[in-house]
Length: 486
Ligand SMILES: C[S@@+](CC[C@H](N)C(=O)[O-])C[C@H]1O[C@@H](n2cnc3c(N)ncnc32)[C@H](O)[C@@H]1O
Image 1 (cartoon, protein in one colour):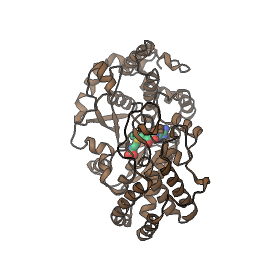
Image 2 (image 1 turned 180 degrees about the vertical axis):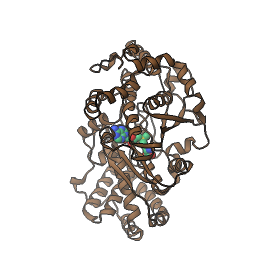
Image 3 (image 1 turned 60 degrees about the horizontal axis):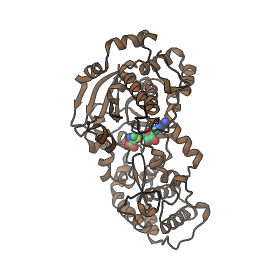
Image 4 (image 1 turned 60 degrees about the vertical axis):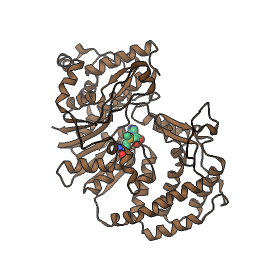
């Protein structure tokens, strides 16, 4: 094991002499050698493009287009991966399932599927999808017609069902819109008895939030229209809908989509299951050799804080301040606020698998020469106040540390010969490019997987304006890694 101080992760050093395996790795691989090692599998591809590796391709699909889960990938991407494998059935898994794209796309390609997602938003989308497929579409149409007739500006409000704000969502809605939203919630909770309609209508309410608010989702945070009077924002949100307009627009879309969904739901399909839990807790409980294919995309190492961008939806679903804080810390470390879980994982894994397995996992992390060089540089920049935020160092450390465990688990639960497709972007801090694709592929190779391909999208990822101004422009790879269990 490399020399490390788990009590204080700020002082990470990689003592390559402390462990025979890591010494061997260092001897073989210098920073540029890692690129050389993977050069032959770094392939450009027509299978993946920005539009299907992002949510973009879902925007035309029935159901998917109702709620824009911007961090999602597309149905099309999952279908293409599965058809490229030339297998007709099997069990597909996604440890970071988000809105459940992998699960439903796999199911529609004839595969059983299972996913884990920590945010209740994913669960809400999942339940709505299941309900909408199951329900008699004519019954739903009647409920929707009735809903259209209600004037929520005048409809009664029971305060028990009011939208309860989080600190960061206060003032997010124009007053009239918040009134209508609360009347809608009252209607939903007092007038609707049918459980499927209730699930679908609750989801409809969630789909409206951003549109009727002063806010827009913007990666790291919520951007506020200047008329909301929050801070010194000069941002102008072009389309703040009235509640009525947003609702009618969505209901029209739903009505148009229903006939397609009707045909769809009549076919008998394999099971698609989503579990609302923390993947770090659930993965170690799963049996070996369970899945044929894993298709997933973790949060990227890019500081994007889902608990801020999705704060309106989380508040809508009843998350309070304490639950929000817990959620933020329980997610894979990818923001400057993430504190990491080194001790927790060490305790859990030594207890569950013994110190030998724990060493194997940690060794994949500590012995990675390229990562060690990057972390040393970031630590130097941090100490010299050259990082935009000092938390970037800790975030990068934890992002990779946690990934060693995730990759170990994905390998363990995958059948021999099984495939993993993992979508991720490279990132850049203080002008230093972090080739996430090479580092994670090297972890994978150390943990029993073979890197078959690193598919690079022809569209590269840009840099933030701050990075460009200070350090010039560097195109960063957007990739889909393809690992195979040997
Ligand atoms: C890039 S998104 C995945 C989107 C998904 N592919 C889709 O199409 O909707 C990453 C997801 O990982 C989830 N996540 C992060 N940390 C997690 C954890 N510890 N356990 C389970 N899910 C987690 C996030 O909530 C987020 O929804």
